[in-house]
Length: 537
Ligand code: KIV
Ligand code: ZN
Image (cartoon, rainbow, N blue to C red; front, side, top):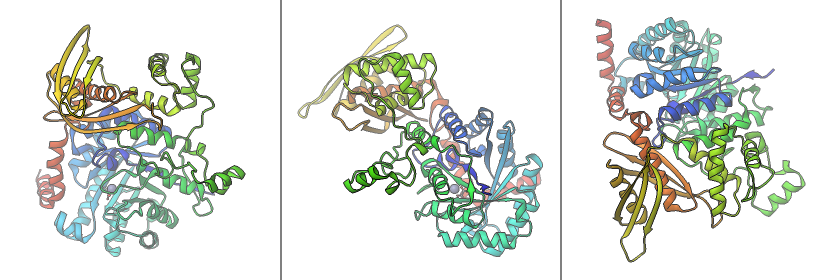
């Protein structure tokens, strides 16, 4: 019988650490709920000690989800373990994930400690974590470059001290599938009580081998894989959850494991990540990219018509790519609109449906055919709305190749309308300056992206912006058939978040704390000093 493969999702920890993927509390909770719906076994919700924002989100996720284990990462330090435990203790199924590097390279240069010192620290801290929480994972950071004899000693001791999961990360994405197989086999053959723990893989993708390595680990006996939606993560990323899950599902002849993943939720989960972070999924991304199931070549199309198995190893429906039955237009009513939303997988409240229906009707006045992708864009653009302190009343923009652009913008706040006029080198710049003048809160534009939702000339334009004031960064998104309007709407949604306060920022105010924490991580002697002072306490 197929054994259970535990899916440990670290989108909100390893993934969120990657540049461009920061999320605010509300966004993290939304992703966590979707991960629960997707059916992952464990959500690594963050690194509680790393910042007050991380602590708060791990704690909030612990109570927001019910049917999934919630983990927090912790260095092998008491204060980290205490923070992790305090953040996850309210979860139905809490886990503390303790790690320490074990390769000589990391021990010598990062931690500045001997193998024996590291082993002692692992014993002490795994035992301490196990005294608080029944579910303890221990990770040997940089396992794939760790001496095998030492690795086996560490694993044996970690299990003896209470670790129930042993993670063997390929931290720097250096290993090949053969290395992984021999590593897992060695640990399984040489560690006496290895059956008391689940072996886990955590493979980074620096050589593009993350998923292949995770699969090699599964083949050799690992029964947990750590992965992220779309493979986001440090540097080149982590292993993509959707790829691992669909690989083991599509090839039961090779992998005798089953997961609890509702694969029809994969596409929606990836879309949610995209709409939340604003980072586009590459069109040819396996499983969830827009082209993953598109067959352009005539030969392929012919084969597909004769028998879809000729070129399709899994169906789009099996990963949640929906083909809906009808197109909406100007004459479509509320009922048809609601039905379409349901077909697309959105079950919304009456109030939300009503509001979106209003937006849909406005869109029909500007665009003849409203496609499914337009509707998804509408839903996604309103999904993440902050309090709407400022709304757009009207705008006029003048722009040309032989003139300075000017923008005249009217914004509403409560029952008052304010007007701002500004010039700039382009229409977007002029518009954002006019907004800045009205709201009297300076901000800088950190990032700006504009894309078309569909291919046609009358396509909806989608603008994504990131703005910052002196301390924080906020994201905003706007959708319109007019790209200047989309840009102003995106800016206003970011501005509203900025005025909403720190909790809506995507760095949660952690940049300063994080920096000093990172220094801690790099400076092994700092850790040691802390350890000594802990000892002395
Ligand atoms: O890549 C890594 O080694 C990690 C550990 C902290 C599990 O992310
Ligand atoms: Zn990692």
